[in-house]
Length: 422
Image 1 (cartoon, one colour):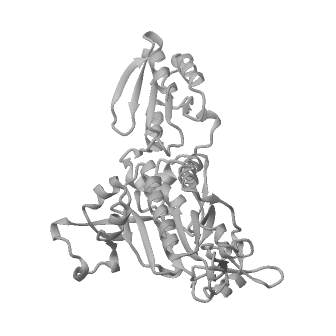
Image 2: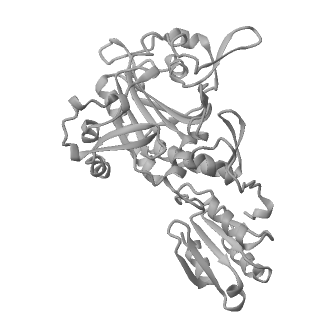
Image 3: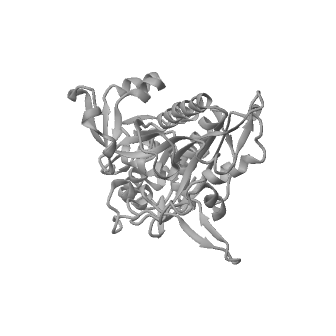
């Protein structure tokens, strides 16, 4: 993609109200633009990152056996009244009326809708286990939206829902999602800290949160430092039993590990999983017939990942004072191609045509060199190919690694071969 044909409204100065690094860089790098408080438009560069995150999530969810669906943003209040949650959810729920004065709402979550979705079709134990997921926009009317996409009102979420005939089977589904989440976050270059958690308005009696360590996090995490070795082993049962909690869940009386083994850090929540048994299937009368003819309520769980929040979280984890440093797995483009002078245009065009795909973002503008370097560092693409006077006189370009800052010279043909084979 040529910058001269692209829409990238970068900013030199940080807009007022942007408090944390990710919010500042999201706005300055032209990834998002605020439309209203806690509501953002996703610009082309930001949307590319969002789609890459979606694709990683979708790939791992599909590998787990989950099946993708899509449910409506607007939900009838009657479903929430049936489950008993309508009056309890609070002011975060945006309640609306349609032209017929029917009570509706903009979905903050989809437990009721998905329970209704399967209750007329799933009647036998033979239909289970089943896990449906979606990647869908949600709305929660935060009293104080802040930190950009980290605590917005409208946000993109991956939510999955499991259905099982028994507690034992439901635990298998829960553990599978636990393991799948670790794989998802690792593919993005992140190390998740998994904590026992309160179930909150979702309900149930078993819940875990997935956090990323960050100084700007709103939660304080208390965890056994053995958690990092266990994450590598993917020993789910040991991970579930290790001491790892946040904020109010921390109780020194229940913390039976040596003080030197206890880590205390700030973290940002990026995922949350719940087992809630028949909390929704019982009031909504969703049953299946077992092999012995007995009718039982379905056991359910739900599993959420903040997709749009992850864009901010990744920036919090990977940046420097010049801008973003995207991990390759989520980067909007892999390579930033910078043409430093008019005489080098032929060489830069040759590289661009050889690597022409969504891999390359070509700064073919006539702006000064300082602006080009600053902008490319700000948007944080993993690699830069810098085409200057040596490209004309010696057929040599510079390759810069954005994460390390290391610069290597190589012949144009070598540079093309290096990036076209991966």
